[in-house]
Length: 173
Image (cartoon, rainbow, N blue to C red; front, side, top):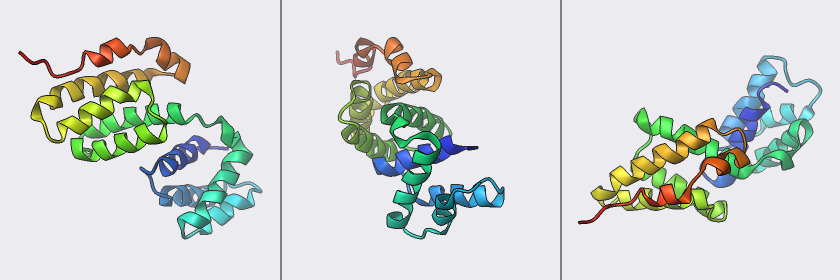
């Protein structure tokens, strides 16, 4: 199905607590407008949903039908989201404060992935300590750059260095 990856990404954000159900409904409405729903009644029902409680099981049904919901890799989706957030940050659409909330949610809900530890920490510290802005931005550039180019979690892991992440810290004295 065309653009199923968009629905999968929106569902991931919804699950992580950093997204909203409305983009998923909008996705279904677009499929109807473009006559791309085929014979999938769940897309029709999703387009008519009005609450998160109505939308969530329908989103899951559509994803299961068209791509196998178990095939959605949360860490890969999170990495791509981090790459997207860096672009939004550079464009001025995100701030350190808005990113802190998002990174904290991702970090906890993904069960503390190693690659997100320094980024989340530096972002949190940068909200109150100006000296952490530069290390935060260095780590953000590093991690987001790797995820932007990664084709899989294994691809990312083969290039990621925790030692390099650890070097993105405040230098005292």
